[in-house]
Image 1 (cartoon, rainbow, N blue to C red):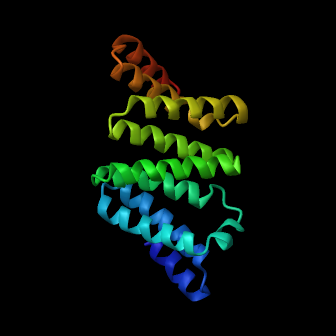
Image 2 (cartoon, rainbow, N blue to C red; image 1 turned 45 degrees about the vertical axis):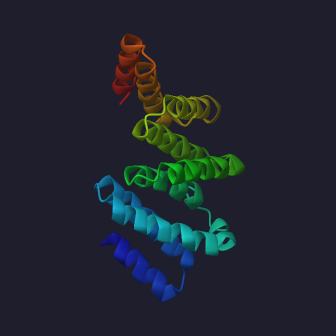
Image 3 (cartoon, rainbow, N blue to C red; image 1 turned 180 degrees about the vertical axis):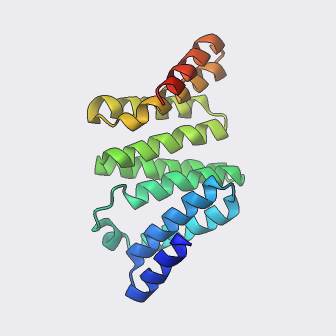
Length: 178
């Protein structure tokens, strides 16, 4: 209902930036509900609109950059739907955009989704890289929201590498932080 109102307002105001925001919210919500095909459709529409109006979207000061957010978040339904190569490409685009901006929450979303993608496609190296990015973010920008996920994603990678006992302890350490 909320995203329908956002899109209606965007239509009324002829505002592609508001549409991009609406697609981002819609896609993340649908993904979290397990509706991957619909999430992917919304995210693709949003990214296409973002690419078409890139300078206009980039001029708006979002709390989390929509390009980094959408590219990071679209990787998850892409992987779920069997498009692992496209998911990897979007992950790299999200990480690149976060790096360009230096925006802490863009980094947080890009690395967090990178970890989640790595888990989905069973890539411990990707998970370790994402966990390292979260840890560096915490150390340099004091974004504490990434602390617990960094621990449980790192623990997952340890388990997948055969270090089961220490990995479980690392996962539990992250869980205790919540």
